[in-house]
Picture 1 (cartoon, rainbow, N blue to C red):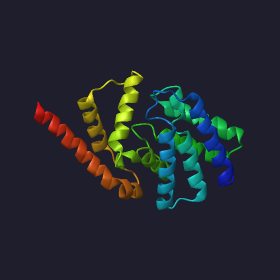
Picture 2: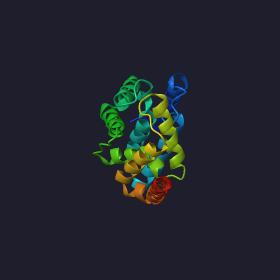
Picture 3: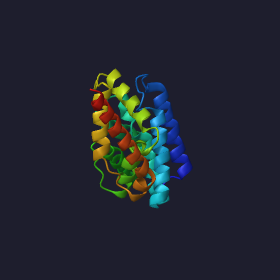
Length: 204
């Protein structure tokens, strides 16, 4: 397996360049900022979950590539993201078995998340770690505006609050580490959305 610095650095440079050249102005949520945040969450969860250096490398490569397919399509973009990763890793003679694990990690992030292995659980939790962050409402609003501007889903504030509440209410982190790190704030965010919905209904 490649040394961590060489393959990961080249992946980072490549993906940053992709976003610089291909990301649209309307990509308010699915952008390089989100990707970097997922990469950092993967680093944190990898350490807490005690994965090996080789496994961490696979996870970080998957994290960098996981939303690159969004340039082409929104729904099902994980398939295109996988193609980007596969093409790049093949060109760089990355081991075939490790490449397959990267692809599986990327595909696992498609909602509803379909995780099987421990690594897939980690990247799924990293991808949605914002549910357990203090700026979750702000991130959620960016996603609403992005979906609206692309004509994918047009919603008003109340409709989006209901969607957000249902989503966070039905979501569970897969790893014990993510639940420990992000779970408490997620409960606070859940409560805030619930109270906001109640206050809107009481005003009617």
